[in-house]
Length: 247
Image 1 (cartoon, helix red, strand yellow):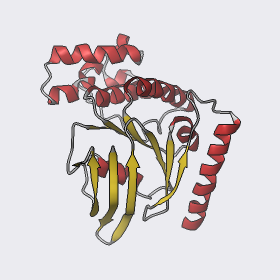
Image 2 (cartoon, helix red, strand yellow):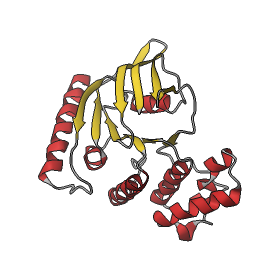
Image 3 (cartoon, rainbow, N blue to C red):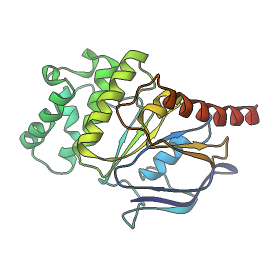
Image 4 (tube, rainbow, N blue to C red):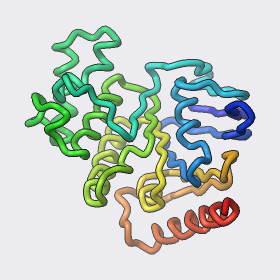
């Protein structure tokens, strides 16, 4: 279980996050929404061990997270692929850093490449791929290190709607297979309603947990169903109130 206790973050005199308390069960898929500037990405970076909290504590299975940890993987919005490496060697970078020999790492990666429909592109370089294909590689790289928790910072935000929907479907297939705990930052209400077990909505800065919405709907979900529309409307109502308060 991932626990965030009494977490706050200040940059000089600017309070960005205030008293965040959150427990995320093993294999739970959480989407985090909130107005721009409310600290969503900052929270993710603190959980990843890339930044320090000003106050509070984060634990994974009762062990404190105080820096980067191989139990936690992160997928960024900008792909962060190495242009000089082909797709296969980009995917195995994390395994190499853990000391896995290259051939073993490549064999592990090829299984996921097939799952993501990228087996024909393993020798291609990032500049030869579409944005959606690059993000598949970034997700694969994070998954290959076998993290217990996968952090995703608006991973599909720069993609067109059709590609975004397709990658959401593929992500859920992988999640159903591996059952990772996922903390997923998004600005898309539709995305959250389609993906999440729970939607956590942060207030305007300083970010506080404004509302938690449980989604007890089976997957795959019909994006146009009455049940999903009710979730979408509830999220939009809370976000709208925050945006009005921010204005």
